[in-house]
Image (cartoon, rainbow, N blue to C red; front, side, top):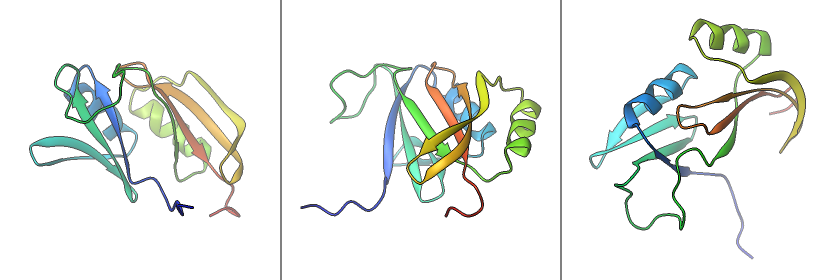
Length: 129
């Protein structure tokens, strides 16, 4: 059986790469280019950005901006995360509230990126790695 280790990258198809970069930089990611393409880096992972209508091969069977639901673990406390989001002018759609993530209980807020993707930002208790 294959031994999974971690997520390396995922691909988002977006309507407007510049608008997408602005949003994700506001929540703490770093935009960069490689091979003439745009991506976002966070921790040990990245998100490659495909401009709708100019997707690179191979790609998903149904590429549609706004069809993703993603959760990112961020450094807390949640009150600081909420304050940072508000300072950046971002709208929290739901939360903070208690959820269960891959490592157990966590506190989350939900917002939407420019394409309507659901973005969950989660803080685990200090006792969880």
